[in-house]
Image (tube, rainbow, N blue to C red; front, side, top):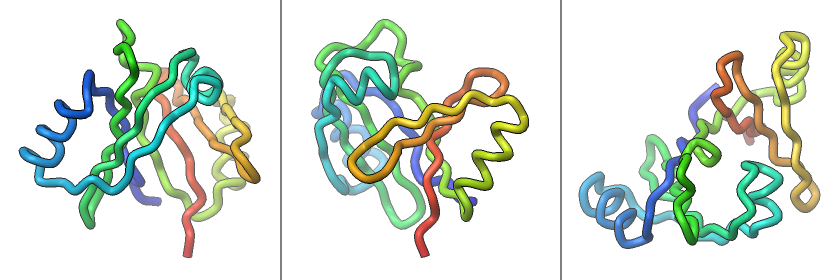
Length: 128
């Protein structure tokens, strides 16, 4: 297993660029738009949101830039783990009684698991 990315919230793209590019010296890998229906399904936030992925050869940080920063940033905050066998990992989570959220997206599903304290983890299948 390896850490795929961490997810944080910023109030603006300029603030994010100043910190992640200028200070941390990460490169901007991609930008995207998280549509409100997917944001609602994944995080319970009914708002469109920009996404910026910054990174280097060692790690990535996914920065959410919502039109308005929610009073609680926690809905977006998560760690993304890449596992060798996602189905086996999810089976272990189910048998432990952990809450799993699967959200359809195109031909696949986005998967989140909450630990026993409510911390949120996105689970990705490792690619070879």
